[in-house]
Length: 374
Image 1: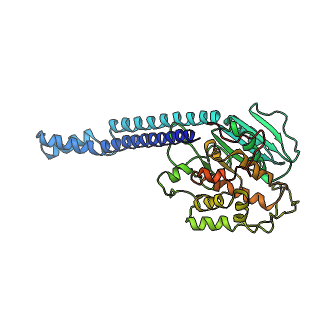
Image 2: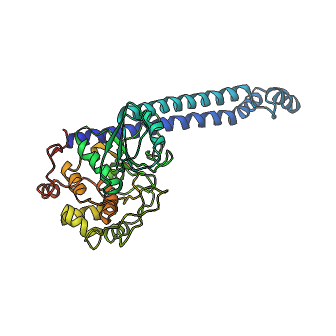
Image 3: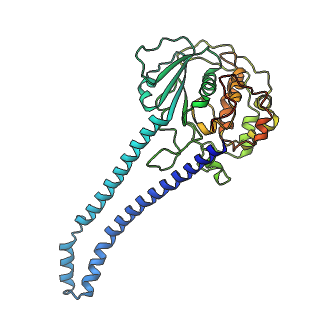
């Protein structure tokens, strides 16, 4: 496991440095073109003066004939055109490489009830595999993309029941990056475009640890320098983040399976005073405190992305243990789990003793491997 994470970190640094060098090179080309455009007329005048060419009137006439002020020189236009062509070529190569990477390395997981999933069918060709977990016995189109699998689940646990089912079932064969989306999402909410770090990158997508429409966050980038990145959306002090997670609870939730449906399901309380108490019960007090103290992003809304290496930091049995707590269509524990993804995926690597102490409570099924592939 350590070797896997080390290789991913090394790849991350290489990708970041290469993108920075490419960006610097492009900026230098643009700066050189601008400098040449500004300095050429001045250099011509200085050369003519040192060569003793004519009087002032002849010099002015020659300059006007050589460089009409109303039109740029041909050399300037050629330089600009060359830079523009180079930039477009690099962008096209980068775009094609990104699209190919998504088709080769990225899976889409959709939690579906009775929403219109035509957007999923249209987007399927962007991904290696698409998993449609449908929970309300809805009728689906007969013609489905070859890379799309339909799996039926009971209407339990909102979207997170489907996500946890997927991680547990596919644990050993998770994609390098998996996008988890609700069926009610739109292509604008859940597509490869938003699952990006907000930086300039050209040739291949950067590795991710966690991404969400509210703001993409990568745990390795956050903690690479020992401090949070300033661009993390909704980023606040650690005390504020901890308080928001620690004291979260719900007395009721008017849940509907789809925005067009108005018949709410009965809300079931968790039996815990707040999310902190639930975390201590599920993960044990030491690990719960570690997550609360060190997480960088508490996610909600149910659309996010996660790296395989980051999901593998925790044993498969942990995901099954959370899934076993879900038994109703509308319950408080769903909202705890929804907010736990950010804690798990944006916290630095958890010390092994904290995980080993819970090994008995997280005993997975026969289909759920105890350890991640090495």
